[in-house]
Image (cartoon, rainbow, N blue to C red; front, side, top):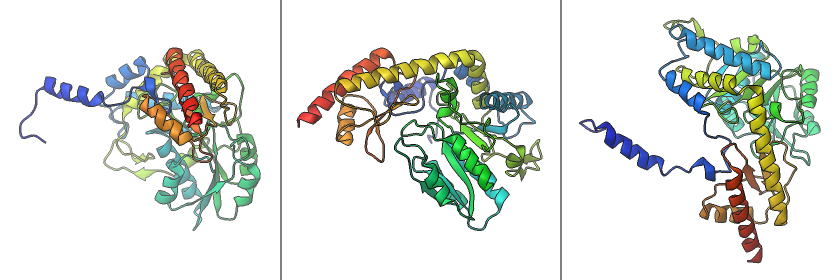
Length: 379
């Protein structure tokens, strides 16, 4: 820190220079985040100083959070669901498993997740001292039900299903997982961090939410396809008893207890979600998701012109291409200014077709992709 302050113009200039080093989203096909909607940005700025960690001081902001939870609960089949705004899927997943661990009180608990689960479950294992077992995937890269069932033992407190896997965009068979959870009297958490604001707006309908009786909790991130500002995640429980198990006493605040992982929590995140939910409505989200799916299928067609097939037909706006020497293709695309990613097993090129991608830019990418694939195949 400098001894003396710096003038605002100089600070702004420094920040602008540093910001220019960031990759603009228009060249990014690897991220599940995007530019927040302008109404979300305006709401975030309006509530920038609010702290949901002490809701008695910010009663109006607390009402906003409750309304956001009601809207998300309604979207996921239960307007009476209980939860709160988190920083994102990682926190939501940690807290969901934290709640069931507290409820079950088994000395050496384990949970079962599909092999496609997000790396946040590795953090769950470390932070909560829970063994995380990974079930096999079926040929469509979904959780294999028989593998999940085979892993269940007397120490299993819950299972996890993914609705919109990070790598493949696939949706696990949540109905079958729900039935299995009920039959074994265990917890089912659905990680819909990405898919929560995609799947309800697809033309094809999938069962993944609280309409299934075995689903205990859902993680869904408004800061991904929901267009809220970062960080805005969401955790919802079917039953309030699970949320209550996360309570700690807070004697010096305006409330007596707190159920959240973070103490200080930005009310701006809740305001941004509220603003964009109410502005877009279901019709707005349907238009956005359908456009992303159209672009995804157009990119599939362009890839096939180069002899490249997807590993699976895209279920959401995530496209995984079976490209020979995917790491080399990724590197060459990076040199042309495109950020793409790679799946773990098998090694394939992963593309996320987010709303910030225009048809024009996607065609430019497809041209570069075709050229890179042709060059790579020839060497």
